[in-house]
Amino acid sequence: MGLYFYEPPTGPLLGEVIYDRAGSSFSRIDSTFVNWNRLLDTRVLHLTGITPALGPRCRELTVRAIDMANDAGVLVSLDVNYRRRLWSASEAAEVLVPLFSKVSLLICGVEDARALLGANGDPITILRRLGEAADGRDVVLTRGAQGAIALVGGKRLTVPAVEVEPLDELGGGDAFAAGLLDGWLEGSLEVGLRQGAMLAAAKLTQRGDMVTLSRKELTERLSARTTGRILR
Image (cartoon, rainbow, N blue to C red; front, side):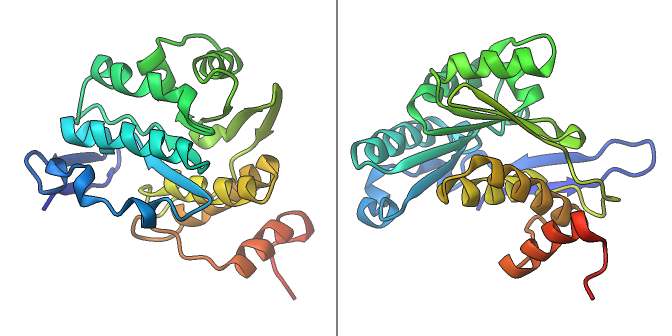
């Protein structure tokens, strides 16, 4: 079983993630282990760049999943999630960058874009570079405490981060992606960006790497952001 160990930041000390995933059962998976009919019975297939980092078979499986989803008319989203302790930037770029133009929605952190694309300059310049690599697909550039910016059909969208006092910093990116995909599937990436920012903030105030928030609570929090902090 693949494992990772997390040591949270303490005072001036940085947090640290230590992976123990080499040779795991999942790293030896191939397409014969996948029930493709079940996997592709969906509106969107969401993938992460961590999977192909786990070994050659996982890389092949990721590429095949994208190709099969495209053939089946299923939308594909990819969160780059570059992890430097799993593979080098050059290895990741060789595998991941060619996939950017094959997905319907690309999510990438600003530092990941710099590492994989060598993109420099201000966030808008990096966003444009990401859009070029994605061949005009929808792209979202996440910027942590500075929020996120997106290119959708050539139009630029911006959402600020929701300010909170973090309790646990793991899982914020996945929470953001969940809200983003929900709005995107309903036809509005702009709504998705707002939902993602709120879900990410909610996650940072909860322990663990998963956000626990109902749709009703999400709607209330988005509404409370403009009408006050207390629902009466």
